[in-house]
Image 1 (cartoon, rainbow, N blue to C red):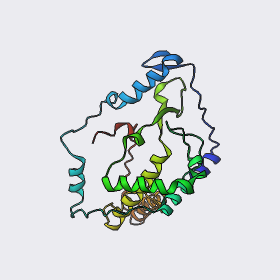
Image 2 (image 1 turned 180 degrees about the vertical axis):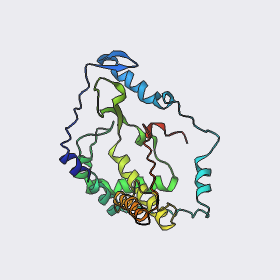
Image 3 (image 1 turned 90 degrees about the vertical axis):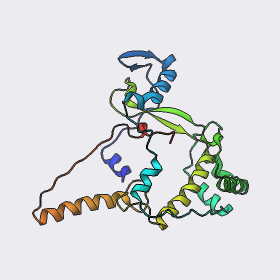
Image 4 (image 1 turned 60 degrees about the vertical axis):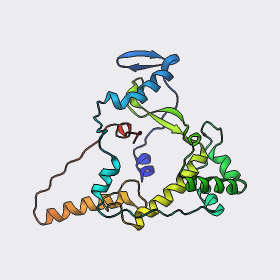
Length: 238
């Protein structure tokens, strides 16, 4: 859908090159100090937004309050070499890589050779409940969004993780998503980050509700909230 929208609106390709200087808090910073300035800006952005975080409230307690039933125990489902090969094939073949220098294109090329040791490593991770710290290391790069290219607030960070990290993450995502679906833990109004056309379902539900209210001559009121820099405000420590 977004490919069609971008094509119709003729959305231009964004340049990957940074300007010779950036404007930070109305002060011009040269390209030599840009890396340090971007790192400080991305790291402290949530604090600069004056976000109030309630450290006394546990996210798990909020989930338990919303989901009154007892949580079903998640069973351990080990991987097979075939599943590893299937997940690796599903990755987009890209030349970019994490700090290890191994791109997804290389992983796909040697898929049949690495599936056995990878299945062993992933099963050990699932069995012990440990996601190795080395798989969490990322190369952070600034990506220009829109508007003034010289303003640092118009850039967002993207993380280049190792390809092996993506494979292990997909295996856990598949098992967690299956557990949530089987036990009906997610509410039906949860449209984001779900497969089988959740975006279309959200649009249909909204339009259908409006038309039904319109036909019954009821008043229609809409409240739309746009959370600026929402992901920057996520507390990663909890």
